[in-house]
Length: 72
Image (tube, rainbow, N blue to C red):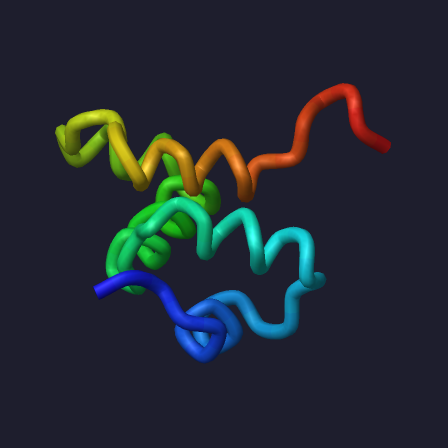
């Protein structure tokens, strides 16, 4: 089952409508969002554990959640 507004706010806290729409559009689940957050916050530790690099919806979520270097 895909993400709901309540899932996103429970995991991330309040977010703006643009981010909410982008996350909902991925069709990801709440567990995929939680996994993406884990990768965003601590990718070196997950790689050190031997976990495979994220793919699919988790990778898409990471792209959305990771700020571009160009942005201020």
